[in-house]
Length: 181
Image (tube, rainbow, N blue to C red; front, side, top):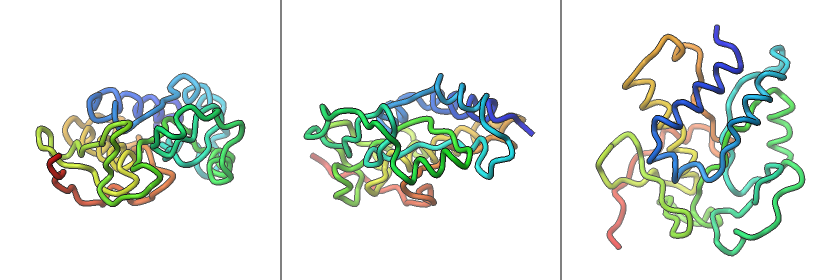
């Protein structure tokens, strides 16, 4: 079985391999910190090595919780994790990235004029949004799946795609054609 560090490194590599999609889906990343946390995590914890991407409406220490809006873009960074994030970290999960979202989670298509609209990596070259206010999280999960399906490696048996802390199961959302305009 792969180590916690290998799981985190695999998620980083998968995000890098899907650079265009992930540049809009991930608004902030903490690769080095995630690798350091992975090296120190207690492997007996129930979520040891599970890699998370947290929606931009939940506090993560050091990141601005802007909820996908320019209105909050200059707000001070969070000084503590949201209780949900703290609980996940306490159980051994590793936070890798902050994900894009519809402004203030208000919208069903995942559109965001400030930070860009995440598009699904499952239909390369097509203009399809990921859908839902957790569009960045959906793209993170879909990108990991697409990479593992298109270029499987022995590590794929052990590496988990990043999980969206805001929307478990967001990978099941259907791609929707983006409206013109």
